Image (tube, rainbow, N blue to C red; front, side):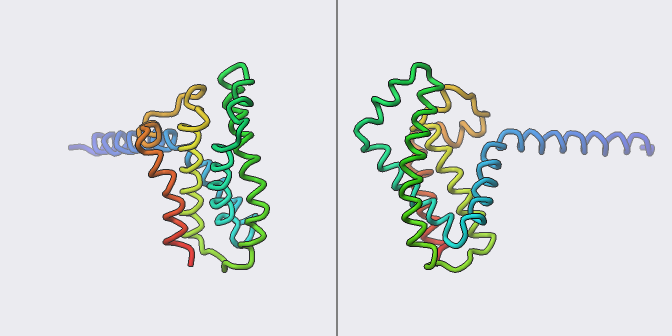
Length: 175
């Protein structure tokens, strides 16, 4: 074996490895972006911010589900895109109002979270939002998610597990 064939093999391996990493990154970019947004939010919101947000998302989901006009408001949107947008706006409002009050309650009760619990809770908040996007907001009707994301979030039976994952994270990571 000469030096040129070894160099070609190494180059081929590096190129295929880089393309595999890029493909994996591309498939999960939405999850990565949501996680980074949540991490940024957790630092900006101060002590207990991510904890308050997770609790508020549960409250917001409950309000979204029992609000008597949710379906009427969503049905008023003509296209699938507008319906998805309206459902996200209703959930956001139903989450932001409780967040304001929960943040007041939790701001003094928790010490500073280290990076690892903050990262895990941010990741779980992102997965919670993706699960809601699939099963509640019907985002998959207007956006075709990559196959690996579909594999983890599209099955109806997985919604429960993504729904309780942030709660489990809170139980194990917040003391």
